[in-house]
Length: 446
Image (cartoon, rainbow, N blue to C red; front, side):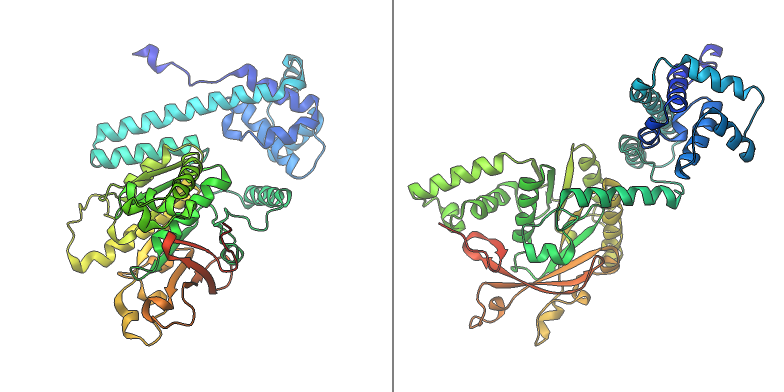
């Protein structure tokens, strides 16, 4: 037992010293090092303090060498006896500054091992103390491990100076890419320009009455993201089966009438188009789960296991169950349940750091109005849905209510809420035979 107590956490004194020595020998490597390591990645306290000092000096564009570092530590009150000798030793034990990133990788790896060990201890304590049900502890454990994998704890304060660096990097990347929008493209260009695409950590709600095409537009943008971004797309379908969704994807991609697909009355040309569409759809990284009794925790857990995740689509919100309720809550509390679910979805979007698109039913309130276009207040069991969502899109087709409509097969995508810009209405082309949407000016070329 004593042997276990005296075991040290994983670390490499040599690698830590070589990183610091490299920074003192050649200041040109400092920007790359401070962009990769954090003070907490150092295990030895003296090394951590020296790194913090260099990091601070770098932020103020100060000259960095052993003399200036010692002077700065005197000012900060962190200077200790024999520090001068230790700094010289750091430079002596460092073979060459050219290999600094290899030393950084070792320090980073040891820090990750310590994080895993810490989380393992926390999980063990939770289980032994019985802090909640097994499901609660499993969910907390997955969140902790996921936070390590993604390099963020999700807790604690972060200085604005560091956040600004992240923002600056995002701006630089956007500038280099030359993309007109910061987020993932929906494939509907007017919509992209209005909402700036589908952005990381955003909760996007698409709401309408049944039959307006919620599922269709969600599949449109899901397939477009999968085809153009190279990232994985996950679809949770609580209403339609996996086969039904794939049938819709085939109809939209092949431009073969969906009725033909269902009846099997296909021509040779239809089969050729279906084959080509199947190759395209089969080549993207898309996953579908049609389990009708999923909770947000179930979805969150599944998404964490998907590599290179880019987008999550949920069809639809009111069919979801609150974790642990088993759908057993009484009807009058359903508003609170849906509000809880919407809040958890927003938290999930932030944790996964990807856009989450969730479909939602509208109440029948619009049916009694002369203007049946959706409003935020029409959200069924709305509660806090409109507060949690970053963007709310309402779908409306006049020809659904008015068979003599002057604009047949024209859909209105009404931006009811937009944290990234203005609200307004965008017209889209509705292609009923393919259960698909396109930009209004776009035509399919035979």
